[in-house]
Length: 352
Image (cartoon, rainbow, N blue to C red; front, side, top):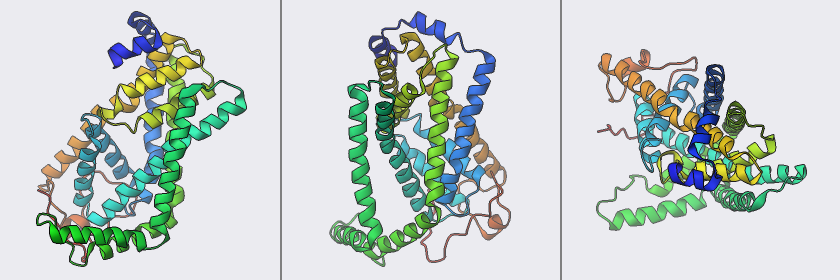
């Protein structure tokens, strides 16, 4: 899709795109990398707020290691979540705490992604620019998804009835299907407790959860604008916002690693709709995606393998922490309080 579809959509030849890429100097490249790294750092408060006791540096490690795996594999988000789960368990966090972290951070991320096209469309309307059908379609899809998400979250957050009903269905399945594990207290009761703990967590930290996601999105949009400027483009901020909104929506279609292919084509098509020079649009998008997707592979891989090497040197590996480990944690640490021990009431399953 990148090699064949991009020239067809944009009308730019690869030699023209290469000439535009040659406009990026070493100074500009260093500034772009610094801007990319700043976006990752401002994102950490949304991760620490969803998992009390998680330091900012450990949150950054979780982000990079998960992206390293998910950007290498089709539908790699699930594999990245497993890697993050094992790291969190090694730090002493329980399975329920990690499940809440994964759910709340993904909900916050989805809210920002689906709300962004509608907000950008309002900006386009006020600026007098012509949005085109793609931006309108993205806004319509985003608004619909946002409505469904808000409705679902509202039903769950209101009381225990919805989760107890779902838990009851799960109990019925577990009773009839032999290979489905059952919950000693019942899935309904377990789900109700999970909902109550999640609700308290959201009430205490929703500002940080959404604020970190919004700051991250803002810096990524600035990074896209800077990439277009670096390749010689003079693109209006509202046009950059449109391309970024389309990228946010298409990035949820992770049929390919990092949604590579569909995202680039959609972004270039949106920039072309507003009259951006074809070679500039393709080159700017490629530089931007090389940073937000490609850069996370080597950096995240080095971070993950370094963390594993530190634990292996200490003789810990992937095993669950002991009391001595909690007193002297090994690996990437930060200034936040130490990770809480696994609650005694939570069943401990040793990862294989």
